[in-house]
Length: 422
Ligand SMILES: *Cc1c(COP(=O)(O)O)cnc(C)c1O
Image 1: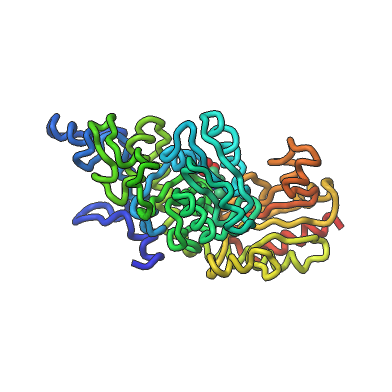
Image 2: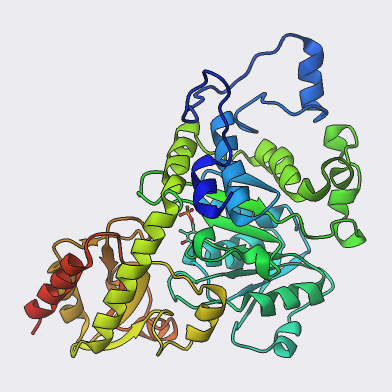
């Protein structure tokens, strides 16, 4: 099946007389004919549902679709994107370990890495993604267990050179984890460039309608876990009567271990209702992404020509320093998120934002309705002037998430806001 067809049909094939649409299985529990069959489920000797914290048919359908769309071997859905990133790493590290991340990452991920993991005794080294491989390799330590980056970073909109980071991960003998939230598998499939694990905040484009928080981990099935460094995959797990993940689950060892250890113990399970909404959203992913890209490209080009705009940040512009990387990794399109700097002070930017009528003022990004945010007075308002300069947040800096409205209405709304600050 091609991508568009997988969006509709992967993960669920109803048999004679069954519902055409994967139903919401709103049940925490499942019933069996004998004590023996329940015992086999607990020992992971048989596949099946026994408790929704570990697996649920509605969520399973979304997981199989996600694995197909990314080209992976298995997937695990979580209650949020944050939980997905946390589990993706927790499945690899323990106290005393180390991993490498780029600096251009989502704010929540930065806090998780720099503060929460450090409190648990896991250290992170942040690297500059513009550095060459020789420079990057200096961050590698014997206990480096993962390398992490975002395909298109939120909110800085930098494009990652995935192949360079795959080479770094290989040099570290560790898997490359890519957060593919902004690109979506429609525009970029990181496994094709050497990534080993993909994570998503499905709360963004995959759901697409801003109705269901969620996350996902997709296992590329392309990393060799049978080595001393990752012995948790190839040595017996006493909590499952000595089960060996690599032996029993082969290429899906990473995804299965995340489910049966981390979901069992930490429990950030998505609600079946949310998995249903995620599935519904993914059905139209290609149509929506095409329109997000066409609209955002039109808005970016229009803003770049506007006399009241200082600069525009969108990798789809030929003037962008990441344009070549965009052409290589996402030749068919990009996300709808962009940012720009308008000429004027903080007051002017606030008045501009307040004048928008169709585009709403929101903290969220990446859904079908356009929205805007002024970081200096919202997400970054606690920072000192100096810290803001370091984060590249200027008084006139605006983040836009372009939806799928008619682009003429969006340009008219933007122009009207500029007219109010003349
Ligand atoms: C939103 C976001 C997250 C966090 O996801 P939640 O679903 O909000 O927990 C992680 N990474 C990126 C790139 C995001 O945009």
